[in-house]
Image 1 (cartoon, one colour):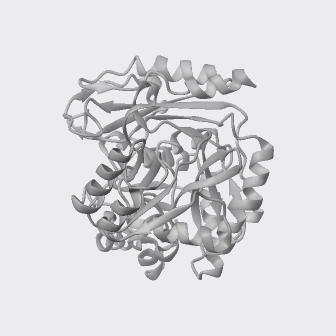
Image 2: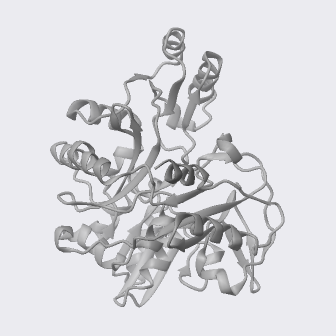
Image 3: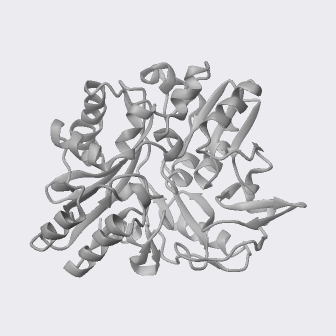
Length: 423
């Protein structure tokens, strides 16, 4: 079968590499893909948001199945458009992808159906939001309603920071129309956990848990990014907590979406906070997380393509979803200055012996060489029997990769290691 993967980052590279293990797949195409995928997929220069061009390409090239990975094309209805021309696709339709596309929608959904989350208020007027913040509890969390490349969440530790955040998002339009509405919500405390789950709208099969590292600098300092690294499994996420989440969050969310006429099929990402009052939802994503995918999929032992088809066909209950009992660590190598201003276009040297451990997020391929072309350039993953072994292995591989202007955090997994020692 010929498969099309929509997207061009490290997440998509991880998906492509895992799909290549399936004996059912003969060729993989990627729109747009990136220069680091040239050995594994045919990359085509079509933007992930150009739905009409993606559909035309899929039809012209007789694509049998599509995987729509990023949030933008999902929210824009790429799955709907592909299905309309008879091409089955992995991922939610637009009416279900709204669970990530609008934080106002998702917060109201949780409130309506009693799914545990932080208390919140919604504002469409900046002055009203500024009046509210004068007496609101601090710290607080301010979220742009729409998509913002994973950076539309601001934790304000002072009232001044909260005022600046509201002005930046609503008045200065830092995230464009995504900031037309904002959510101001209660600041929750506790360990964070990411849980990705396969679902066909009836059955939910969670993947192995993970822990993301959003801040740009060591010690969880600096600006929020799209993610500087991750580990799996998350030591805070015990079987007991997993059972509670299934009963109070995962299944209720799927049932709530069904009741709203927005059946969700694909990968639903649950961003959780394990508070003293139990697990609560921080956010939903309508797709695989990035860089969580780069540690979760290397631990998947089942056939990813068969699982994806089962979510589309509504047969997930009969499909095996098995993960290794090992650990994984992914360290993101970024361009210095990310997530603000940075330079790229530097030649990247990745030794052949570690190529299979490297998921390229931003690169151009020219004349047999690859060059950096993005903020987050690549992720380096290691799988090991122990978490410490995976962390040490990932950093050993990072030290073998060379490109000018590279920077990365040196403490990915440190908090998780501390948690395992505490136990």
